[in-house]
Picture 1 (cartoon, rainbow, N blue to C red):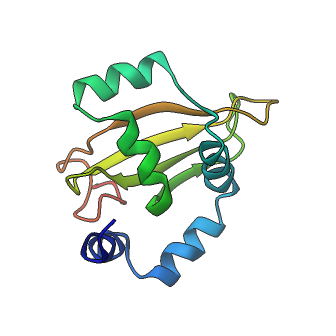
Picture 2: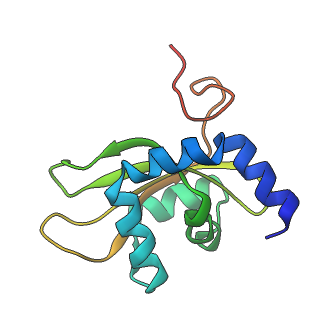
Length: 131
């Protein structure tokens, strides 16, 4: 990744310190990153359908984990811990991805869904819902 692209991603996500504070709050995101680094990733059927609708590549969402920013965290979700993150694709376009880990299991990281956030529903940072 070029330094310019990395800087753009940091600018979108906010300052590095703020990003790190948010990321530290999500053990789910850290677990997902570790699982993805080991290649332990699955995409749900719904995830594949949404990826196709929005023309998002699986490789982009896996690569985007490195700079992912937590939008919402659900560590106690009944089906297993999950986290909604903001990522960027190769064209620096925003993607929301819900990553999860099945309840009672340590693996795999699952792409529950992924989509292009709607600017009508999300603010300009893509991290807060409009009211």
